[in-house]
Length: 139
Image (tube, rainbow, N blue to C red; front, side):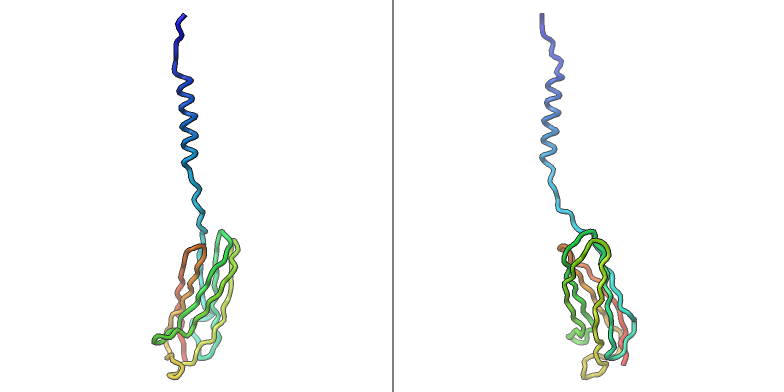
């Protein structure tokens, strides 16, 4: 009696081996945090020596440490607003407020009445995002 070979067992073996090889090629990439930042001041117009609140909101799907840098109200080469802080970010909404005293609108203080930029920079999970705000400073 002659044996007839159908090839089925060899075909199944090839499928099993190729499936194992495909699995071993997969690599796990680190998952980047999905996050966004928004900011606003408590008012649009300020007078000399008034208190300005900069309210920052960060929304994230991960926890970690964020570096926040608020700066602006620049005249010439000097920025009159410079605040840096480290914040613990939790998954979800995170809100914090920073207080600043508006400088005098006088020549000796270095700023003139007018429109100024306030920038909020955030560094989180290896990425940087910036929100830019405009404020008016009056005498």
